Image (cartoon, rainbow, N blue to C red; front, side, top):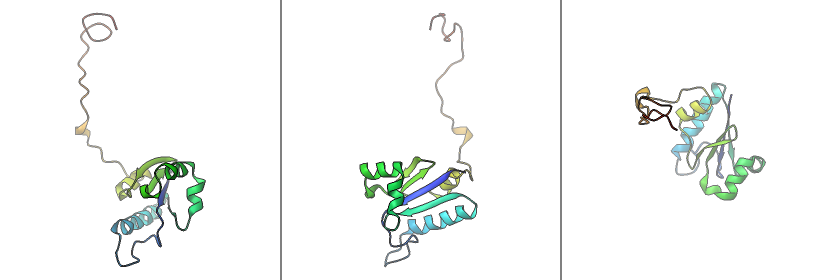
Length: 130
């Protein structure tokens, strides 16, 4: 199962319900992460204030912090690949990253490549050159 890691800016807690203003994105991601953990997903959040070593130990995160800094957080990584920066993935995206949900793909929305049927020659033209 893919390992999902979310690296967050310095927070006093992970729920988003502390202080006078509730951060709805933190409330949502807290519920989403708990939901995925309940399904058996390998997902974890790392807070810069309480787990700075998690940021220093991961090469991808170190590089991100060096180039972008903490203003680019949250950073979401799946098996070492950066999949989202600057905002939290939705529950549907997290489920897809974990292999627990299907990405919504509309079979009717396939892109047209503008190719035509082969009419002659190896390249489809009237000549036989490529």
